Image (cartoon, rainbow, N blue to C red):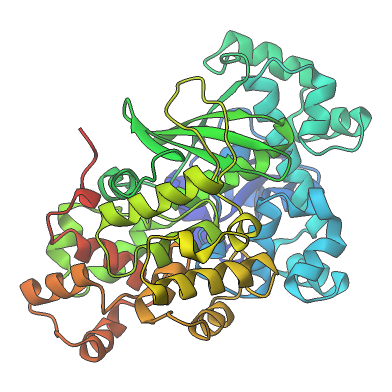
Length: 490
């Protein structure tokens, strides 16, 4: 979008927050870059230039605006819609893969050479993977500086910097303030350091956001021990590269309040990425709803509750196991089966608030369980054990970088995997915005009440008009049925 100068200028002059994250405005006279909705007086058009990423702005010598804080913009929705190598690379960089595995690790995961990845990212984002990871490290460092009491030297390494000197230079270059000055400013403002050991931050999103189905679904399907709804917040445990954590997510006007407790602060980048992915916060709800409103049968549903998101997961392998346990049983039964696995094979954790007890079992731990110990029909046992074996040995990968169509083919090849299981995994674990569930009981009920075709084949054909947002259409269709997943818990 950054190449459409006229459109970008209109967005900046109208301070349109819908375009935050789509592009960044760099001001040639002040050498500052901003988000489109920056509250200051817009610069003259001749002084504006536009970039596709914060990293590209920083490489060009611009520093972040202190008013609009462009480093806190929602991510571009483009990377969640596309499944090509650039989109998959961006999702991996957002998860901190470059910091942990370097450029060779990123390239290996994508199946390309490092040179190809560098060339593709430069062409689309104006910055290579190292520059993009550096921009993300700077953002993580700012969060740790402003919301924790960690010594600045520890902040440097927790944010992914290789040395304190590089950390200091980067922070000064990006924010025009030294790390100590950032902490002093935060102590005087609303971002004062939180409770020791707890990182408190706001997760931005593009309005509108309807929390009813999003948090309602997560609360209604919560597995005891790893998830709970408490005091207006969805809480769960997180398995992370360097340790584990506990997160509490609370819907608030204009943002999601996030409180993180981490055993290792180096996991902050991925913890934030996992939470944003879980809540689908980088979506473009205006584009989605405008498309679905073109169908007169969906229009009343969209008008009644615009901004519905797709509730996802923090771990693709975990969700695949839970999807198998949920085959042809009620939500309550699926929770019971999953809770038994958690108690028997999950890693115990300490929760100061007392409600969470375990991490979800790893695929390796589940691969060693005795099938006869599972209170499931024999065919379902076979399905589950085959799945966890494929996940444990790496034959099957279900991550944010996974190719959607390849994963579908690999899942279909496993015994006991029908269209519903494959598509619900594609929708909630892989993040495919066009995944569709024509055989789902709730969708069939909604189709009957709305006058949509009844058979899966006919309904799929009718749903072609909703592409590429059929996963969001599913969220609206589910609201036709009065189910707990559609309501925030009281």
